[in-house]
Length: 342
Ligand SMILES: NC(=O)c1ccc[n+]([C@@H]2O[C@H](COP(=O)([O-])OP(=O)(O)OC[C@H]3O[C@@H](n4cnc5c(N)ncnc54)[C@H](O)[C@@H]3O)[C@@H](O)[C@H]2O)c1
Image (cartoon, rainbow, N blue to C red; front, top):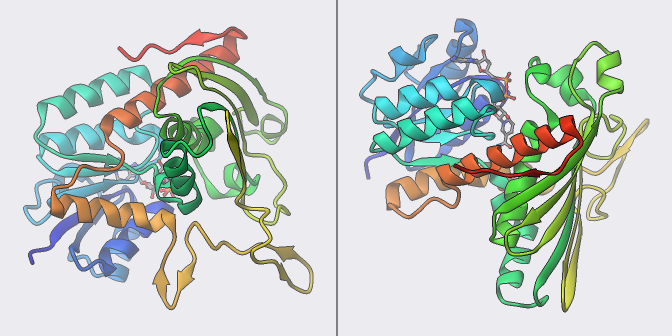
């Protein structure tokens, strides 16, 4: 079977993950890597066997061997490569969030609607087994009518202070809140119609990173479901896992509780620290990268080949970004905001 030629735009931390998965996938051929930093593009290309590397994505998009691209640039830099890839007729696996401004969202939607390409947004939580089991139970009416949800998805402080060079140009809402909102839409099977949010900016600002520490938000869905979400990126690095993930889903006749990071499935005690090694997100099992963060990337290629509909499409990413922009507006004005999807 002919393989899908894959090119990567943005060869950073997560771009390398795309490269690792595609290089090992029987239906994909990693063809090219593009990064503004030439050394980085070359390094990833050589490490994972791509034949070409670029510093300008417009040049990469001219490569006829590239049929699909992964857009893995920083959160605020998805729009330009997305529009160029649409115009070049390349299928797209776009990293979350889809975009971070109303203007970019509109421009991307116009380009997508004019193009004949398929787009998946990488909300990989939809491949997280406990979430899928819960969603299937909700659909099967196991917990009655969905009433409310609580979801805390937080990051350790090393993420904005050490891992991301561009934290100030993003926010915890874009970085993790995008997953939070999409996951709750997945459970509720409804759209968010109104939000109210408060935020605090204390810790990171004092460190010279001008971005809020935390948002706590209330969401009302069109079908009546309500949700409280917390997104914060200042939890201590000593947390047993880099994320803190807690979820409660309450129905009229049942409930789910999830503690996906403080869980007791595996505890590791070393000389000077103890932690809970990752078993769900991206563990390596018998040498193979496994876990839901990898499954979504594999699923993109598999559905591209089979022609099946993607689990997460352009419109999902668009709507999530609109909700997050409404949350930011609410936190700024201390008022509830109606979400307008246009
Ligand atoms: N699916 C997930 O859950 C998940 C996990 C991690 C990161 N991400 C997303 O992936 C994206 C990248 O994150 P990261 O951690 O890899 O960031 P990073 O800073 O490590 O890498 C980004 C790379 O993009 C390059 N770049 C920037 N503009 C470019 C351009 N115009 N052309 C080519 N290269 C360009 C930079 O030089 C850098 O090497 C972000 O949107 C992030 O939110 C998603």
